[in-house]
Amino acid sequence: MALDGSKIKANASKHKAMSYGRMGEKQRQLREEVRSLLAQAEAADAADDAEYGADQPGDELPAELQRRESRLKRIREAKRALEARATDEAAAAGKPTESAKPDSTAQYNFTDPESRIMKSPDGFVQGYNVQLAVDELQLIVGHAVTQETNDKNQLMPMITTIEQHSGDTPSQLLADTGYCSDINLAAIADTKIDAYISTRKQKHGERPGPCPRGPVPKSATIVDRMSRKLQTKTGAAVYAARKGIVEPVIGQIKQARGFRQFLLRGFENVQGEWSLVCTTHNILKLYRLSV
Image 1 (cartoon, rainbow, N blue to C red):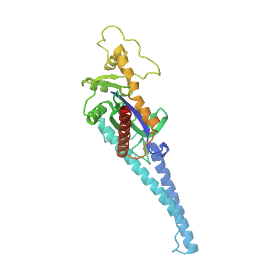
Image 2 (image 1 turned 135 degrees about the vertical axis):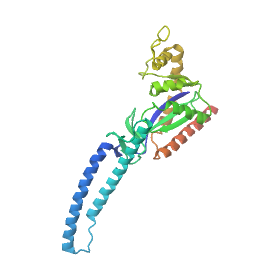
Image 3 (image 1 turned 30 degrees about the vertical axis):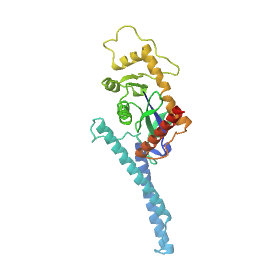
Image 4 (image 1 turned 90 degrees about the vertical axis):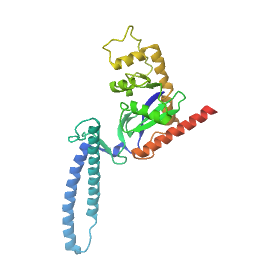
């Protein structure tokens, strides 16, 4: 069974996002504009009252004020959302939540606030990180959506997802370097799963070097041991099968079926949409296998 992740665009433009630092600047700018417009409104009201009478309304400036006040309100809500996110992240990391503060570059998207700016092969996109676990028949046996920008924290959750979706634990699991970390390798070593996880990103066409001779040094780290496992003939052959298992499925979904962007907005809705995409992939795959 092979595991991989891919970035899918959200139904939102990255140009509709604003950083936490920029929000503070924009708030100050809008407050200045509001003060200026209020001063203009008072002057215009006084002039209109003198010329046309006090019972004649002047709606032009109040409309401008309303637009800016509405913008200020949305920015305040966005700042609170980023501050709550920073608090949650600090709590998850076991850090003090009282002093948690968003980084000045933390982004909030006004169209789909639950999407994130992520790096993809096509550059930076506003989207979600989708996960797939695929068996040798290219059937999806586990799927998920995450807001995290990389796959580092998805290995063990995806194993749990596979158990929930398929009712079984994989005996063998292949994954690329995006899932490699000391914590992940130690965690999967405590299971019965025979894992083959790349320890470094390989260039196209590159093959692992020959396995060093002799016993594994006692000083070898858990990453060193996995790297050596993949350098053996058996390990290299097993891991090489990954490219024919999970990567074609991602290609079939994104290229053949053209699913490169979610239609729905919001994390919960996107999860449902991704589940539907994976289900239809399996239906199509089963149909082709049966004819």
